[in-house]
Length: 141
Image (cartoon, rainbow, N blue to C red):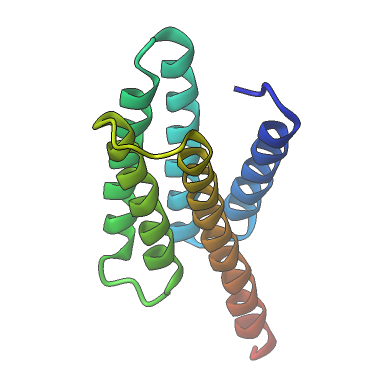
């Protein structure tokens, strides 16, 4: 939810990255952006409706991880692997939260936030690389 300036900045960065991927990216970037945006919307909707916030977050993280691993499969580009790695960190952090592992709350939240930004930065890097490939291909004609 958008309850703090940091959360608002994260939502704006997510929107910008996904919009750039939809407009300028190839099918892999579009699929990654759609997957991450859908997971974000579903996780926030489940958090608003349910008291099981950690469980709903972990379930959407696992589904998102499966999607990014699928995008990695035989991909010639490195960004899906980086996105899957950051998503794995987020998923494992959520599982630790479900298992009540002794971790300070600020550490838990920091890991979730940093891994989310890692996924978005990997997606943005893939989008910028797609723009570069498109310009390079158009310049040879």
